[in-house]
Length: 257
Image 1 (tube, helix red, strand yellow):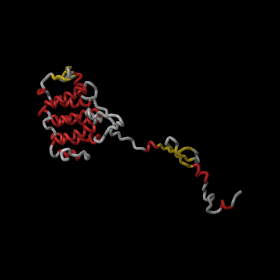
Image 2 (spheres, rainbow, N blue to C red):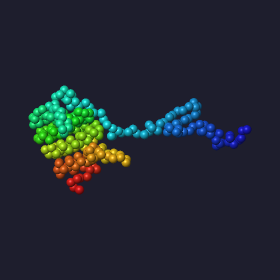
Image 3 (tube, rainbow, N blue to C red):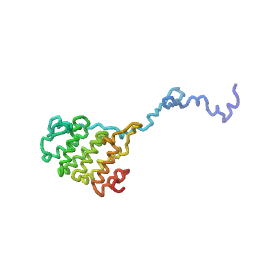
Image 4 (cartoon, rainbow, N blue to C red):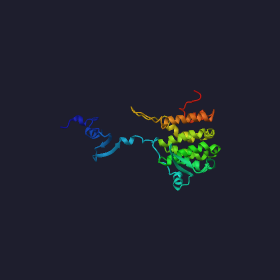
């Protein structure tokens, strides 16, 4: 049977259209979320497969921890070059200095101890924290010339993005600012110090219905950053808020309000 209308001008058959071929080309989506483009034509095979997972942009990893580089503090500690010793008493473990604090070379030892703040393994972390606190407490005018060297260690420690290291460094920064009015000397280094703190300033831990004791133990990174910025503002002077606000737009003054 060959109807005349199939051969008529303008008909689907005369124009070369074939509905069967149109049904051979289709798009289907499998249950696993893969979009498959199939064209069953001359070769009758699959010509393209596109995964939806590849369409999503990769994770930036802004909070991902970076591996810390080997520190010179470990090498000096293993060789026994530090004039310190571990002392056991009723108050717990403490360090005993073998020389007077005033005779220490702050250019060498203070920079090494700040470099060791990246360590998270005992006893390295124990010694670095106590040594830095002691030297900042008794350093006086010896601390100011060492500030440029300390900034390198501070920046390296913050760039590791490890919560424990950042919290330890924030406590040391607070002690450094109040040591012999060092706040003004740190203003020119705010860009290096506050760049990483902006990322973690609004970070909070969702503990659900549990209890979070990090603020009580001074281990809450968000609370420590806010506390550190307030110490910077109080100890630097009138221009402190302007410089902090420029780098941390969400910070509100603790002196003006």
